[in-house]
Image 1: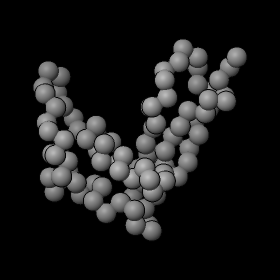
Image 2: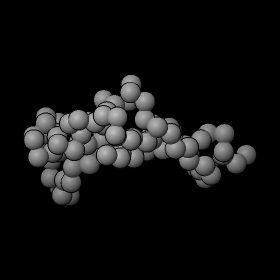
Image 3: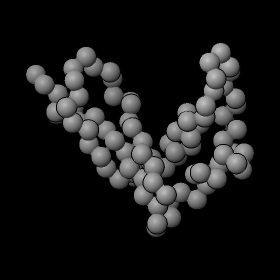
Image 4: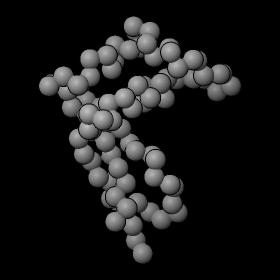
Length: 86
């Protein structure tokens, strides 16, 4: 199983991001997988978001349920702040 998470916690800047650093997800970040799963639910425009607990429905939670096995690979894409132009 492969997950790609993009870290958007960096403040948006008007400068162009020249480099994105890809790294392996750390075990301390595994809880974020549920947040990303919730964010990935398609909600039609004008509809309200369902309660977060919906991710624990078996047909949804199956995508992250056993993440962390030796055969799993998760990566995070991060903005490399040192790559911004002057």
